[in-house]
Image 1 (cartoon, helix red, strand yellow):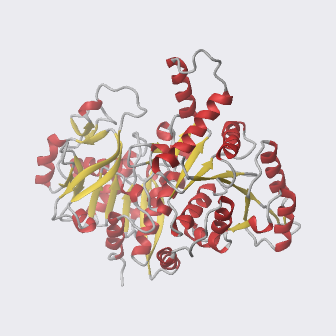
Image 2: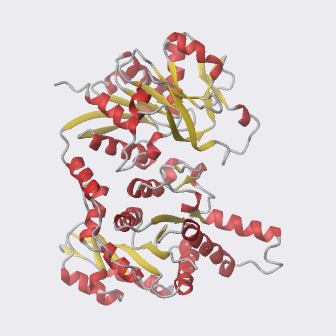
Image 3: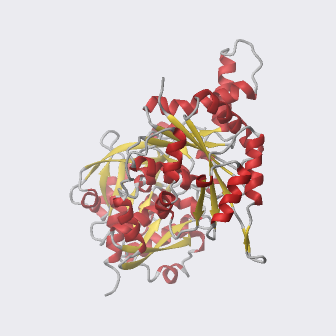
Length: 537
């Protein structure tokens, strides 16, 4: 029998309160006490995964080592606990129903009527327990997406209600995150929304063990006692989560509030030692006390929703702290860059990053950003489609292939310097057909990439269908753009650089996915360092 304990995190009153950050913070604290832990996200939407969702709808699609397209919260999980997540860490309603319907078609239910209870709830419970038993973990933290009371979340709430009793006493704990709004007219914090939120949970058969109060103002002892009384939780299990300058302060704040100790007590686990958080504290100190500042432009077409580039933005936070530097990131809409405006808009930046994406919208603006960085010796990093833009721009303006393009954008281009992988040319289904997950790459030793990584053999995560067209490789290298990273198995080009440029690197993969607090990504660290060198003394 498994000894894994389970923590379920729910949210109430409003969405976007930070369940993912609270879950990741709790996981970090338990991990720092010596417990093996992972975090799982249950998402109520019917899409099978976020892979085909517009970033404006759902923010960034995060990719795991094993090639799962997942919710952006998994990025927070990895950045906090420094452990790779997998397909099992993100479960959607679409995937649950897809599995149950497939079983029904296969005859697994022997002609029985398939219903939400027990068939859907049983599949949810199976997936929750599987991740703990398969990995032999001490604690699994499961974040339930949405807000308590949502119709979409009801099967998940019912499943974890059943699971509490199946697991037995002291094997599960419920943490409920809720909002305590401040009414400026009366200068009061109001607990009534929290009371109603917990009441909805109680109506569904769940008594929370811990209530975390999200607030903009300090919550006094009287408010804590009131919440304790009306929500049936111990007074010391009412925890404050006040606004902080950076999400990376939240684990330290939760440790002060003794959230980890409360949860361990509820689970019957020993509070064996103080959390080992010295490296984390040093990171937060460096983050809050930068010695330098640098301006870097992020050029993309989804900049109106910063969550679309969440991992990139956090990678700059990590790299900035590693360089004792505050990265002032300027989000630049690529559609707004024209031949008349791009030079003025990009002037004064010490670094330029051209972001990933799909489709032709905003492409010309990205090409102009590449050209500005190349011609003005501005440190430059481009990712996925951004790297492809760097290739197209170089082909057009240096090699004289004025009609060069990606076959994704113009399938009749005479110079498809970016083309579809041969294995994908007959594939019509866009979902799940891309090169996804971690692949090896061999680096040239005389390159910025090798200097950054300190190793010739690396492995990075991908999410794309189109590639550098290797038929043009020799022509590019003769003109001055060199392939410095090659997949050793497929010989596909993964990294391009311009050796005569101070720092110009384009990567086909997504380095931002692997950047964490304790292991900032070397390419971002090197890029920020190069940008710092541009700052005038």
